[in-house]
Image (cartoon, rainbow, N blue to C red; front, top):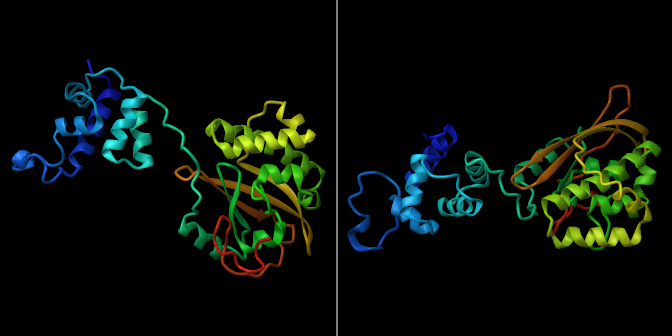
Length: 290
């Protein structure tokens, strides 16, 4: 008897196969005079390197739950997007595979949004390695030189434990919370990318060079910082009460951080200074990023 999950998986496979373009010029008339659109089951099975009998049973909802290797082969064969691939895995009762690495490119639409909101909302973007990849001009004015030089100069965790910037920017409670969350977020990042050379090097260098990091790392906490309250010292307006909210782009593993000043806390008078900074390997507007 077919389960509901198997039936849904079979329906999805059939729909994707129907959308595939048959190969041209292969096998003479083999691909001519088709009565249905898309690839034949045998053609799809050949592309995925699985038996046509097994693939047929998958479509009919009669096969055992496919392995992750089979699901990955099907996803490649169908040329699925990340969202479609994840949906395929979930239909088969498997958690989607983690991304191999976060994208280094910020969506153009997000950069335009950061520019349009610049005068009202400081915004930053960091990737799944905790590297800052973009910030708008008002965020650069509010936070100052949060991005530095060196191998880990853009990394939030590294800067939290090695740079004096945050000691000038946050109050005592804010600094303590930042350091605790930074270590916990690094642990979460390493869980997503356990073999990533950059993150492994970051962990090695912080462990060797920062007793404060080692103390917090040894607590074994795993981060999930999605919203928080901070008191931030603005260079001209003094202390501001700021709420932070985070939005996630799962396809690129980017985190968008928005900072809004609470009512009763005087907002900084910041005029737009140009387009958002594209941190990695892109032009940076003069005066907006340090």
